[in-house]
Amino acid sequence: MAKDESIVTPYEVKGKLDYDKLIKEFGTEKINDALLKRIQKHTKELHFMLRRGVFFSHRDMNWLLNEFEKGNKFFLYTGRGPSGGTHIGHLMPWIFTKWLQDKFGVELWFQFTDDEKFMYKEDLTLERANKYARENALDVIALGFDPKKTHFLIDSENAGTMYPIAIKIAKKITFSTVKSAFGFTNEMNIGSIFYTAMQAVPAVLPSVLKGKNIPCLIPLGIDQDPHFRVARDVYEKLGFYKPAILHGKMMPGLKEGGKMSASDPNSTIYTTDTPKEVEEKIKKHAFSGGRGSLAEHRKYGGNPDIDVCFQWLQAFFEPDDKKLAKIYNDYKSGKLLTSELKDYTIKKINAFLKEHQAKREKAKKQLNKFIYKCC
Ligand code: TRP
Image (cartoon, rainbow, N blue to C red; front, side, top):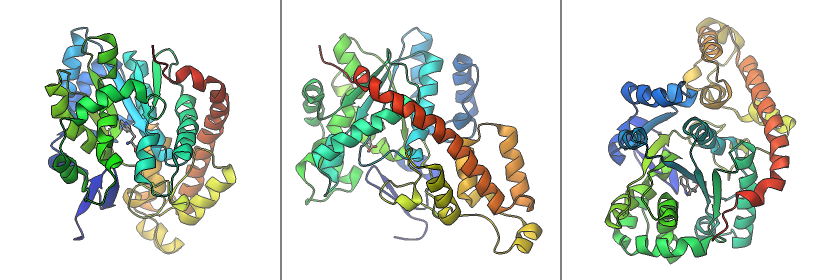
């Protein structure tokens, strides 16, 4: 792979992420000021993830807002592949989704793909993936989604509802299409090849259940876009709307480059980590934009643009624009040291996790209410 090359599919994120290039490659549209203004007309304020370009690209948002303005309400759809514990990178799009639910007053369908992770992970049993789904679901509930407006689909449990739609979709997708979209080889198991059809289902399930077409908006990390790129034409062929999509950036891991990965505990902060664990991971592993020595840092300043703590504050933990700008400038000028930036970030993360973990405990009693019960 050449130095500036990258691969972005749901199953592999490799190389340097160039988001403008992805917009071109995937054929999506950049979120511009006109669209931000249009969203703001309905939401009054703009979430900092929109203001700061954490959500940076879209498909068909203008169509979705046209429909909304005509009184045709949409629903939200997003999901989680339960391959392990939830980390803070996973929470990012969900927090944004919760904001959308509140501002537009709409329903959310949330898919937990234990089937997908079982198919794709050599050593993962279906029982374990299903257990992770129920664990991950607690993190979703803890973010405060409205139980009256939020429905969880766990693929292996809600399969009876989903399967008739999945096979209609699957019949219209060829092996060669998924092969080129995901880089599949002939050695893949046939469950993996079929899986996109399952991920496509929730975008139209409410339309099927209500017997009329309802617009759908999917906030997701851009690595998930290929599933929907493959499914888009099929939706139309089956007489449904194509869903609109908002694409988010990938949350960087603690180490230099790459996205946060659940399979490398040292690059990851889990929602169940203790304050001590958070402190140790950040102090030991967080890639910093600081200089080699204190004297050099004071003299030349640090580089917030490559500093993981700064990236996390920007994308997640420091919603206050003024405070963020001050941290940026102070770090760049050398006034703020790496150790101080790390301490600040540790404090922010631990304050968030303390509250989150308390809500996560309470969520255990609520889980059943959220899971979709057929008929
Ligand atoms: N495949 C996703 C993952 O591995 C889970 C998922 C299912 C999803 N449906 C989705 C993600 C819709 C975003 C939007 O995490």
